[in-house]
Length: 140
Image (tube, rainbow, N blue to C red):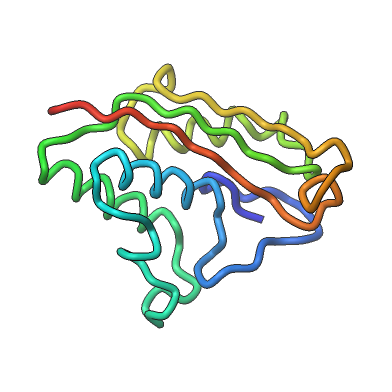
């Protein structure tokens, strides 16, 4: 399983057109939204075979480059990952460090939280993983 660009040893993975990294998808969507550029499905549609199996870091890099051309840079990011399992506490620091590297910001500008579904709903039953990301962008 890949979350935030970090490989996590787990018996199951996530299904998706690309590598299904829900963290990088949420971060990409949040960055696009902050800049008024639509969403990940518009820029990297799952109907385009070029993105089949793609590494989601490409989505982040492309988006950060688009923002830079427009005169924006990443300010800070707050990420909440919703997963009953695997337990993400041991992986949060690695995800935070990787996000900082991908976004060219200091780790102090990144926050990563993990929440379980408390055995309720599709996340609580271990059927899905979700992620919300909130970002700020600032003029470079």
